[in-house]
Length: 192
Ligand SMILES: Cc1cc2nc3c(=O)[nH]c(=O)nc-3n(C[C@H](O)[C@H](O)[C@H](O)COP(=O)(O)O)c2cc1C
Image (cartoon, rainbow, N blue to C red; front, side):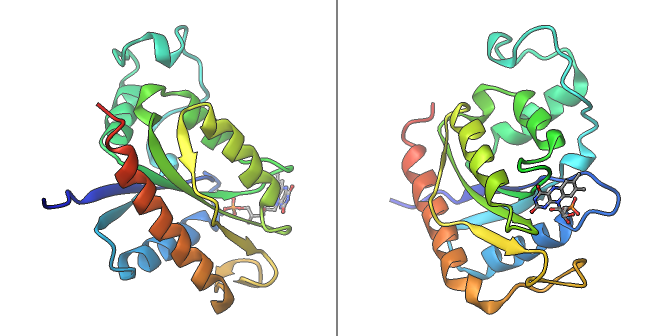
């Protein structure tokens, strides 16, 4: 039996004009592409979706994906086709940014029964943000793998602006890619 190639979205977490987020997401893509796994990785940038603050009258789970909001519909189609995710999030006030929360809230079933890895960064490695994100995405039936990327603004960035991760992260990060591919493959049997 030939294994169908899995498709992963590397979801950005910050929408600031001066964000370092995209640099980290690009590094994740380069690393994942070089891993040689049966999967395709694409950056899904929440700054480009045109979605503002969540302001829908009907909760996404009750709409059967018949969204009137055009940007929400496009976001739904983008997420629906993916088999899994790698969330790349900074930490803002011991949490993940509200822009990422809005993008999660905008959808329901599109997230269900898929696996995800988390990459966080901040002055304290973004650990609080990643724990909060694990709790939130579990409500959306996303299974998060244990290995994660956790980068320090002081040690993994030059002048806190240019992403230069220490090589010591690579074995665990590789484990994260392998696990997220394995779990997404397994969860494919659960999805309809
Ligand atoms: C409003 C705000 C709150 C922050 N709070 C935290 C925090 O609680 N913990 C932390 O480790 N870093 C914190 N930081 C530092 C950010 O993680 C750091 O600025 C990072 O570069 C932000 O990611 P971005 O540039 O991709 O938006 C905060 C930054 C901002 C702007």
